[in-house]
Length: 226
Image 1 (cartoon, helix red, strand yellow):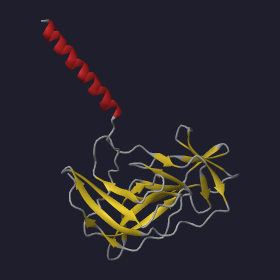
Image 2 (spheres, rainbow, N blue to C red):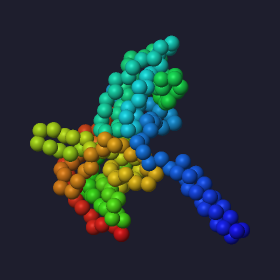
Image 3 (tube, rainbow, N blue to C red):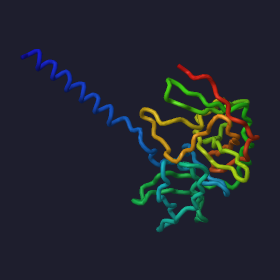
Image 4 (cartoon, one colour):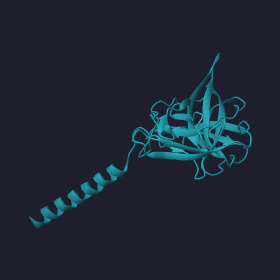
């Protein structure tokens, strides 16, 4: 009897731990959030970068009222919230309950937008039989002010944004797409860049500006990783 109770308690404990892990593990659609450094800045042509599975109804504060932003969707789950003309240099983005989401300073003198990415290859690879990811390899380190890298497919009469990757530090390899896995939040509107696709890539910098596209590249495929 005692042995049965001990085994039951062990399973109950394991279930509790599993439930706690499940509560901490969220693999669903990505919650909206800004990408902004501590000393955030916005140029005259830029704005605040917002990522998320769907774009929220956030607004900019203008003294005693909220003003709707001009939302420029760059790719599925990636947009620039451009502030309207506002008094002063302080830019405040707030949610529908007037809680501050992000702050930035309007900058009038700023370096030009980033040059087009210089990319040596874009590779699709499968790992562990089910997980696929696409990586762009740069000729050098990513620029310090880069915050996102967008990959778009070149079609006959248009360019179609597929997905993007965030830029942390100054990497030489940036993952621009991955299949859903584990606890990762996902963008359900992403389109998979596939082997043979002809693509271009563009930077989004920390002031909310977009670079010119890279030279077109064809996605290759690496041997599966086991």
